[in-house]
Figure: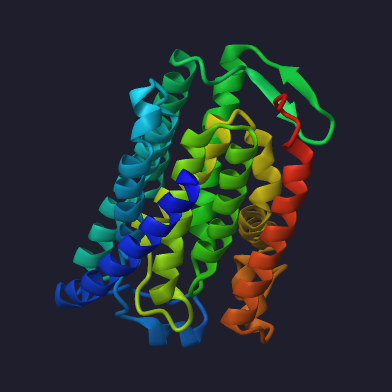
Length: 328
């Protein structure tokens, strides 16, 4: 019940914040600059307010504080740890967005600085989970009900790079109206249900709060978008997704629930690599994958609904694969 109440409260808060935030962002001229290399028709979105991720971030903070206090009073700080890591990632995105707005172009922090800051945040988060006894140096393999035990050093290196990769994969997916929000909403529902199934309500409250906040945000972000989440929102979402997986100690589930994030990232990597190897040839019309489909005639709404449907299907598959991770 707390998970559902957190979701409902976050939805109302996000929707209310959006009603006030969008005019404020317009007044501040916090408009998005569109990359020249993107599809030509995306130039019509130039000037749409960005940093709208503040809506679901505020909603998640308030809902977690309101409905997660019981867990925290009992000494269970998992929801707060997940929220803290997501907030750090969101702060990195906020600095990036602010730099873009000041320079009036689509480049903010350098890739190197983003990587180092995200890596430092990931290491700190993992160290905190280990110190609290939440994390184990094992990898639970979905469907096989077996665990691969690693040394702590190997595990932490693996985990840190998985987290950084996940954060940036979600960021890369944020390229169409409603895409990253809709896909991540499905992932939040998965983690909320899984947490309830395992009776780990703390993470479930966070997942419910973020899911409700995203639904409120999508009222303004679904095509045609009145506001974009910006790196403030997309890096927060990436941090939240991977943090929930590690807080529940099932990081390999990200391969399934994050199938869209992975496909988007791999399409970009393959495109760049093939372009360099062949001196100018391309595999896709444009990368990442959603732009390839756009140039193939798919509408933004069709892509969003298809990618969300695929995510829902893989989330159902993931649930079957990990539901017996803990004895119920």
